[in-house]
Image (tube, helix red, strand yellow):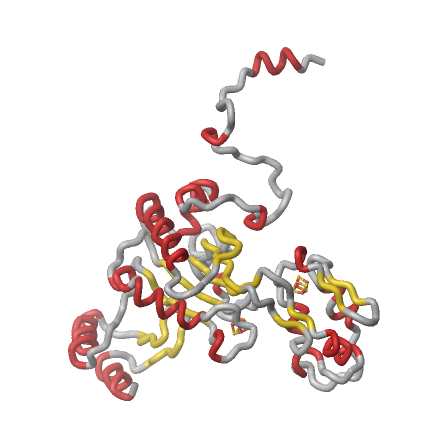
Length: 321
Ligand code: SF4
Ligand code: SF4
């Protein structure tokens, strides 16, 4: 790091930005004639691999995952390391219409903000029941355990109805004064109840990930959050099923994407239906972002039994007032 700073003092402004939003070390401000010598020194004398900031795979990132966090449902660090090794070509050679980012969070808390920032988000989740320790629930209600892991300071009271039950987004919890009941089939894994009572509630044990695609910052067409495309996938090394999905997704995007068009924009232009078809994914209600926002369903003509032709005159004949 000292050598790097010395180089930048000599050849640039000396202004170094650590962990900026566009890179881990950002060297700010130099003159054009210094660029080539700086790259030469960094690669030949410092023996650094500079990666690329072009239309390639960039900034793969994960939360601390299983190394530090009890909520992690997947090994985020191993996943990101494995993808980085597997897709070295995509990392170093601009081969896409635009940049492509993978980010992995171990649970739906999404500490790396993958859902807002990455073209492909890998979010740890579970598909069985939230593990519940009823004695610990009672201890929270009785004031022996402090909610939020003590983050709000000392508490004299805890209202489980107001602070947990009523705030569950799908209203799938009940507390009768003795035990807590969770209707897991309606739980959307928002993590609220687990976050408030971490000693009483924990993610389930049948774990995997939800895969979302298409987030981006607001440069063109405004900011966009990711959409769910695989509600649940097991994420175990060597991640063969996931990598198979990535290859299909990239093949399509490289073929169809316009220059400087992020994956999410290509999907927006050509439709999620088309994307699901090329990735060989079945449509699923969990992919619906805003239910009933748009009452129209656009069927694929090839999927309609009997064909697509519609005789308007015959229809009006049958439906005369
Ligand atoms: S995203 Fe979840 S698993 Fe990862 S550090 Fe945050 S809380 Fe822990
Ligand atoms: S995780 Fe969220 S949706 Fe699921 S039971 Fe808890 S508060 Fe409700």
